[in-house]
Length: 396
Image (tube, rainbow, N blue to C red; front, top):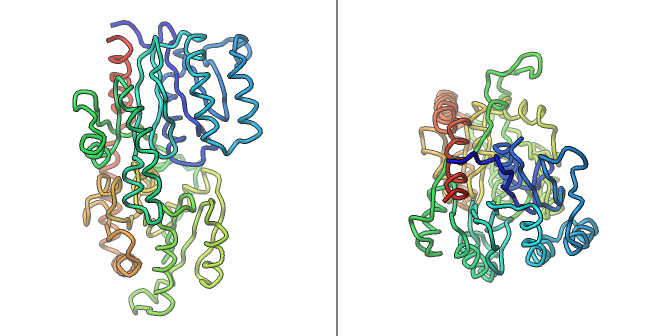
């Protein structure tokens, strides 16, 4: 079998990408890109436009189609328009593929991902699916209208030579609702570099601190799908229905995130003196915060994988999460985390009270979760399985 990077023909297309990605999908695509570093990877995204990792001089190719050039300038002016990026992709993707002689294209679809109107020629297409619009329309309140994107998703999946997913829940939806043939679909372990989050960190870089009594943390985009409003409604119960075993802990909630609902969330926070919000934190400070916390809360209606949840588990912090698609695939209730019914603030409040008042249970969940993450999300093994899929697709 010929080396994957010997002819430098792998391309990743992602609207959101890299260190400043708005969501977990962009970060996940960056993890995939690290697998090909030094092997002639080509990237196309709103931040990077066209970059050849192998290029010895300027990172921008000299021979770029004029359509893609105009399209890139438009993206700079209207950086938040993913749909503009998709339309430009329909006209410029084939030229980009031919210019760089790309033979394998990796493209995410679903919410936050991209869609194709026709199948690219002279290459194999690998589609990455985290969660789908069919799930979002059914499971997230007020987002029923997003069913209109399902035909575009289905069309893109039909074009794919391989479909990769990272959750058993998504795998089930792809098989049953989208009709993806089983031989074309592969469930892979998520590519996660979790060394940063483990408790065994370099003391010269990270100054580990003991757990802070009553500290709970939420990390995520302030959108409806993440369930932040449910969390704040649950937190109100702490002020009106305080339990004796929780009063001693003086519970405090720190929200790390930004998004469309930030003004509404800030108004709710103004009524809750024990809640604070920061838009973002540097990676080192975020790791410290999660490690200090007694509980990380993930009240989502739906997740493709649950990156913030996985990182908290790797950091040795107990997790209270919704029993939703994506998270239930990651957490075993009572063993590696605590699951509560989706969209139920009373159940969420009870779950938080139960864990805050039970240090032995929190310790058991945190230890088991960390061991689970080390065992099942080994970076080298996950990388080899991912590369095997790409090698198979590019050499078949």
